[in-house]
Image 1 (cartoon, rainbow, N blue to C red):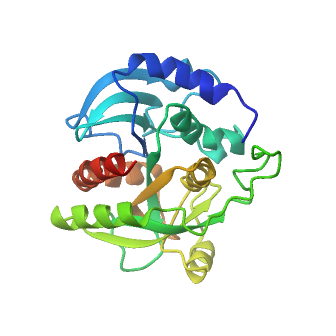
Image 2: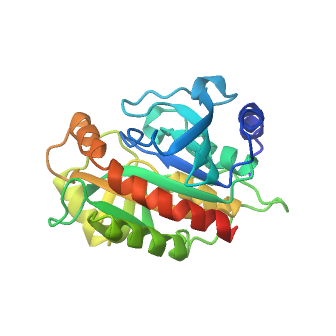
Length: 273
């Protein structure tokens, strides 16, 4: 692992504020933090800038706060907003959230994001559950990591996303009447949106959605032995004109489906630990 005291120091700030140790961590992507307050009984509320080694959030739609409390009857820690590679803090910073979650004792992490669809049939507001990913960022998030024996982090990525949690999430979305699909997510470095040629290339590689996050956290989570559930909200068709404001507007309408998935998956994740 990285020789970095920041995750442990950040966890030491959060842990005393929680009534019980968290079982599950949730990361909320662009604009996906609204509407979850009705489900989360909050015990702790800490800004990223208050955590040692954490950069503050610079992206609209990312609150940059950690909430600890109870969701669906289970103790959780919710990271509202994430750290992106394009913000300039380096690839190690993009893995801070799963490392803090691990230091808090979490064994399952739910990663959500806003993404561009790579299939013409995809519509804004549709949810896509991630079964696999393509790292198109140009850098591996485990660069510089070492295992306990000092060897490089030769982590198996053949099954990053937990199939049981994916099935539970799909059933929950279907029951709630929310359009959902299962596919491959491609992560690009950003901050620019994809050209039409880049979107076509990613589709050829087998991806159904593309965004600027999630993969560093998922890979780090795999390296830490965490179970991963990934959920993309399709906000636009990749390779066509898009703005961040449009992404946030589409994300705001996705709360009912995301709430249904979290309320179903979190108890299963905690029970299986």
